[in-house]
Length: 82
Ligand SMILES: [Zn+2]
Image (cartoon, rainbow, N blue to C red; front, side):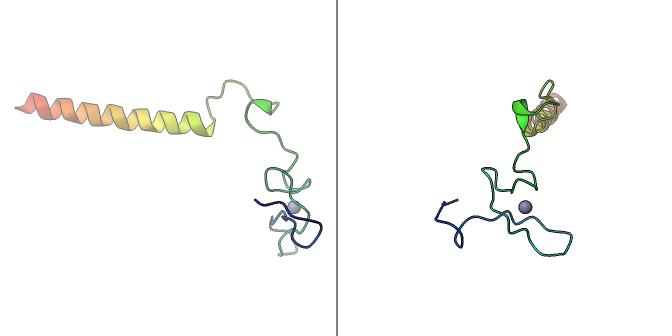
């Protein structure tokens, strides 16, 4: 995101509006305007954050571990059939 001068080349929010178009408010740091989530906190900064059990990273880690365990189980089964 390259920040340029006001107003024509500025980054816009781009959220879909109820009227069907895209929002033309200037975007905040996270890419959305003040009305479409630009002010929302995420991760540990969010007030509802508790353990991090359901963060994107944690979910990916769990899926990867599950896959690794499955591969290992299959490998052990393959070895034990010989
Ligand atoms: Zn917006």
